[in-house]
Length: 433
Ligand SMILES: *[C@@H]1O[C@H](CO)[C@@H](O)[C@H](O)[C@H]1NC(C)=O
Ligand SMILES: *[C@@H]1O[C@H](CO)[C@@H](O)[C@H](O)[C@H]1NC(C)=O
Ligand SMILES: *[C@@H]1O[C@H](CO)[C@@H](O)[C@H](O)[C@H]1NC(C)=O
Ligand SMILES: *[C@@H]1O[C@H](CO)[C@@H](O)[C@H](O)[C@H]1NC(C)=O
Ligand SMILES: *[C@@H]1O[C@H](CO)[C@@H](O)[C@H](O)[C@H]1NC(C)=O
Ligand SMILES: *[C@@H]1O[C@H](CO)[C@@H](O)[C@H](O)[C@H]1NC(C)=O
Ligand SMILES: *[C@@H]1O[C@H](CO)[C@@H](O)[C@H](O)[C@H]1NC(C)=O
Ligand SMILES: *[C@@H]1O[C@H](CO)[C@@H](O)[C@H](O)[C@H]1NC(C)=O
Ligand SMILES: *[C@@H]1O[C@H](CO)[C@@H](O)[C@H](O)[C@H]1NC(C)=O
Ligand SMILES: *[C@@H]1O[C@H](CO)[C@@H](O)[C@H](O)[C@H]1NC(C)=O
Image (spheres, rainbow, N blue to C red):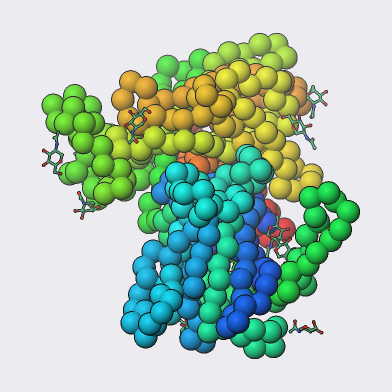
């Protein structure tokens, strides 16, 4: 019985991933908008804007790469605020050499130290873009592109095809470019509107299923009422690379730290039974009359990664009544108007917004005080533990329900399958709605 229910649950999880639909962020997407601002002798100049409309998934170092296929024989004469990664074969050109002649250009952001005359509004952040729900002002990235051998009117310009987005790894799927009503811009004094000559949008959505074969993080539990710690599942993040991990007390660690070449290989893990770069721990710490207190810790096991601007999304029915969060920022997320059970935790600027590489400093933690709703609150049936956990926008693997810390005198086992059943039906409801 339990087996069937559990498989139904996993089936639902897989199914919802494959559909590139995230129940905790149902409208989340990255929109790339092209606004043609001027026609030129042989083409146009456009402003390209990337909006990260995802509530909690940012684009982190080493940043985005946008690619597309030209529909005709277009070339890129020049760019401001970004650059094509390869120039391609421009041997046909004699006097002016284009910036890029490739049929399928790939474009990346500039670094913050780019010369002033190559900078553009909202550019030059090394491709890092915040999530809309975390820092809306930093959730935009822009550049300007001057295209040649293109059309010079809205009748002859052909929209680029086959857009791709790496953010920074795989996981995003982009739809076709769609002509939309021209964008209107307000002048700085707010007294006049101008408008683009032609505008098209491309919408890209994320699927963790496409991004990686294994989860990237796992969750462990503990409680004041049971001495046993529920560890992360073994090989939660895949054990294929377990011969390349290094032990915590290994002598080569000093060399590795001295030799931090981040771009070459972005992960070098500490050996653990779960082999995850990130572990999230949820500890049910104190029970008061009207409140209860949870301690949350995030531990980094990757020697080659500082997670700057990390985020943690948690789903738990009591998050509708968060009284205080001690050393993280907290924001409720309300993807469905009637359900307020999900929230985002993220670091405080200059205090714990960077989760440092594995080692003594590689963790961040906080405590959360929640007010009980006495009608629903219980320590039974694993109710006090989160239903879903996401780190940096990727879902973490939870321990199997029958290993949750149980109340000392509860008949553990039968109640647990009830929990599984409930969560399976809950996912089903969300999935269908
Ligand atoms: C993209 O996200 C925005 C903001 O959430 C939303 O308004 C828009 O409808 C989304 N677009 C698509 C195609 O889902
Ligand atoms: C092109 O521009 C003309 C006039 O500006 C407008 O009437 C027409 O609808 C536009 N066509 C397209 C495909 O945008
Ligand atoms: C776009 O991709 C499709 C399928 O991969 C391919 O058949 C088509 O030739 C591509 N278009 C261009 C312009 O490269
Ligand atoms: C195109 O994208 C812009 C910016 O994301 C958005 O405001 C606009 O609503 C989109 N248009 C359509 C028709 O989706
Ligand atoms: C590595 O993973 C394999 C299975 O993929 C397992 O048999 C082996 O015990 C693991 N080794 C360590 C050190 O965890
Ligand atoms: C850093 O790595 C290179 C090769 O990857 C190696 O030759 C060099 O000795 C290493 N440096 C240190 C300090 O270990
Ligand atoms: C990076 O990791 C891959 C496998 O994950 C390996 O094949 C490659 O040799 C590594 N590169 C370096 C420079 O260590
Ligand atoms: C992480 O940050 C620390 C302190 O800023 C730095 O010393 C270290 O080299 C960084 N590690 C990586 C992998 O970037
Ligand atoms: C959702 O819960 C938070 C507390 O966790 C509360 O501040 C917020 O007002 C609630 N929002 C709604 C719409 O109920
Ligand atoms: C929080 O809990 C108290 C006590 O149960 C209740 O009166 C209040 O309405 C709850 N607040 C929300 C936002 O649900």
